Length: 144
Image (cartoon, rainbow, N blue to C red; front, side):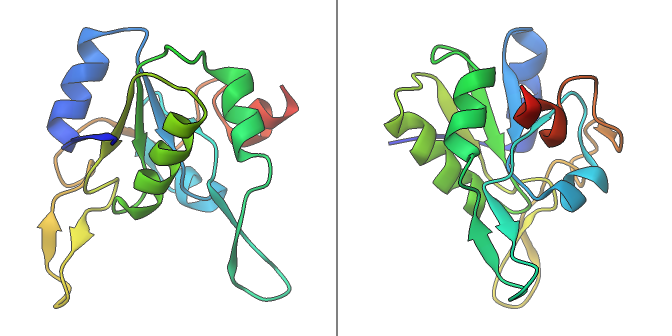
């Protein structure tokens, strides 16, 4: 079972442990539009241009394993918490020993009426950037 955390707690974990990593599993365009400061981007899904539907990123496991050690403290986030939960489960299955899913993601989880039920990173007033730090964009990580 993957541990769960909220955005403010995730930010505290990252601040208190400089070796901890925030792994943003949203698409590259979502990441480029704004992401937690210092985040790494490895999309769990890619948009299939021919169908317009999301498809699994066949390189997800390879890229994450090439960048992060299995004992790295990894906090996984997405837009609202669904993709990150799946990604965290995949990482745990690969033998990563310290994986936490961030509920609410970057943009917040919403209930059936569209109201924010879990505030996200952005709504929590946490540090956001729109340019990836060197070596943390998906294109750079994939090139390895």
